[in-house]
Image 1: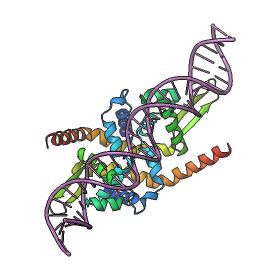
Image 2 (image 1 turned 180 degrees about the vertical axis):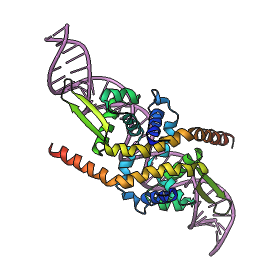
Image 3 (image 1 turned 90 degrees about the vertical axis):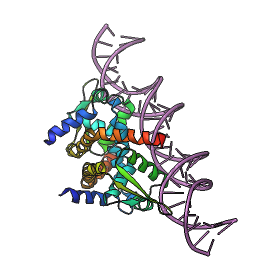
Length: 133
Length: 133
DNA sequence: GGAAGTACCTACTTTTTTGTAAGCTGGTGT
DNA sequence: ACACCAGCTTACAAAAAAGTAGGTACTTCC
């Protein structure tokens, strides 16, 4: 599919007249949220235990981590495996669906990586112009 | 760049040890927010006036629209052109930077379009399992 | 003089999200 | 008997985001 066409498709997908009712919106919001993107990114590197993720994502609270993990598991993006050891060990990994999401998601993240400087520069310029304007 | 490599890069980009301080996080949050994605999607179809966007995005309040538009303009993703007619007409369009974002963004949106059913199905299954558990 | 149109902005309120801190579970070492 | 471990969950509080209702500025039309 040509990029132009893809763009047109996406445009139609979300800006449909009554997009208010689009059932995908909540899922997309949840999946592209600040913590979810980070958790998914971390899991791209392979399965992780709860504490490992907590350390790796740095800055997230236990509550947010378990909350996001639960939501991602609910949507079938991550798998939760409990080993009946003691204390029980819980391992999280991306499902096949989750892996397929990784491509588009990292494409977006990569764009921010490549253009971050431009964005920051634009903001600074905008702010300085408003300051004296 | 191979997809595997791209994934690894993205992973490093956001899950850096001190990603807490990553200056891109706020911008990415803002740019991938519920309204921003919709506004950008709408603008992919060409320049729009304020009222047109308001109608097209359906469900957004004037406040949110102008707030998001301002934020996107600040980051250099959309251009704001004022025509000195009366009443003044303000036209919004994607900048070159904004256009370059459209690709990755629609890639993601497209993924949700393709896999939306699976996500919804997974959620229903999850919910019914928890119900009787 | 008063209404109408465009593109906002402001104050106020409600809703949602996030953080903090504490508690729970269930087996294990002491 | 008691604290400890991992991996949560809960109650409470604070902060952020979003919605609502109204107002502003300027000008043209009646």
